[in-house]
View 1: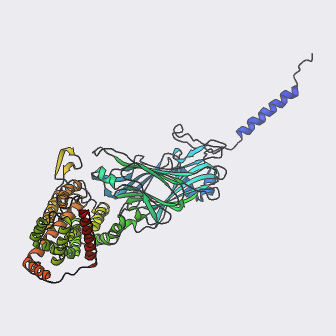
View 2: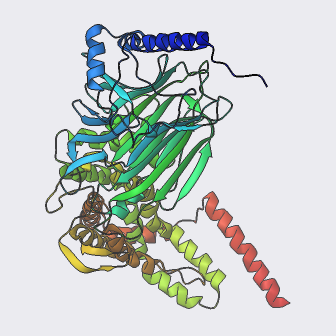
View 3: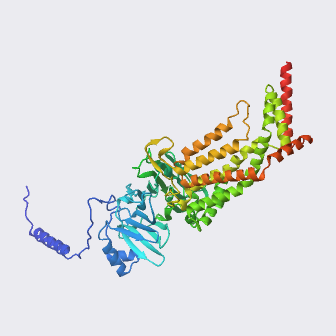
Length: 611
């Protein structure tokens, strides 16, 4: 067997090698290290060699972000604590951005307060989350809300620019850039990357997720929820929305903006490039009305983003502010369409008549007086219809005894009774259908105002008489219990409006004849039921609407009394009817058609009797 011998040259070589290794280690230049707070709580998901987060040297920072020496030093000092927040304030907003996720975590509207009188926050306590989701080339799922970003702030005379930067390596970064103007509620929001070509798996979808829980801002959470909707614009100028009454979702292509409506406030994300297959969801967050309701809705959107040359380059705008038409109409992309004016002609009436009219009146008068003046103008515009209606009712009242006589004479012959009644109407120049004309004519105005008052932002927080807020219900008494469909309070303005409606109904239905035809509903009963229904409906509605309806019906009653006592002479009408009876009967096309139909029906009846 061969002996193992120790070679002295091996020992000498090993000693020289170890000495060289220690010399190389101790002569290396010092590498700058930085303290990362809360490392255990902020462990990065992406690790080397794939996407390890590392700190840049001074020169690397200067080259990557084009900072001068002073800005570079400020950058490094400011971000020594990775959990620092950045607060930016303009004339209208106070915004707080967190390094955790590089996103907006607080938004305070400076010139507004909530229903309790407290500062009004649209974003606070984690109720909003905007994050980017993508997969890496090695299959790792990345959610930017899990990472710490570093911030730089630049001020100019026009705006403040905040860059929230996620450093990945010496030549790789992701930047969330916010540009906040000196005044206003709309900021620029951009997502930009550099060196991400080999990081992102561009074969998989990349999403921007936007979630928001809407804070309660009004006395009635149920009423506020009714007018809180997710709106979106697609295919150019088309808009659609999710139901405000129930949980719902939808998917749409070519989406250009998304609105998270919160009744009188709004958060709107505007996309520079429309996105396809955008998913929306809206959920109601409470079941029963109560004082402990904090949130009304939970909105969420999943927005696919495209890449530009394997890099992020997405430009957007983010609006956080009042849902005020006078403010929103000044921005591009038709984001004012996120306000529901009403469909068809009703929306046209609101957009082009009532909003400009109320805006003009509001410049010179208080909100309550502006509502009253708008009511007076509306009533005067409709007074010709009221006049014609009341003249027809007066004629009906004059011939009422003759109608009763015809009903008795032809009680066993319905067709003959109808024929003779139509002849009498024609001679008297009366039309029983005109009694319904005011209701039909007022329907577009009524529905337009029904849509107007809930969205009229200038009414919010404006008091009038005992009502402390015309955009909400007034309260004269609190109830120790809740009445279904009525509520747990008593409002005075709805009571006054219902009383006015009742007296108007008495006056307008006094001369109307109730049809005795089988299957015809009792119109008078329905008309008298309306004030009771309005009492229940208005109790939780905007007090401005009750004020309008109260003043409107009072004015209508006064106009009708003036017509009755100063314009219409019933004796003169009687004489005119007698003169008309002596003249040969003339029928218009409609009356001739009706007569032909009645004659055919009479022939059929006689034929059936002979058989």
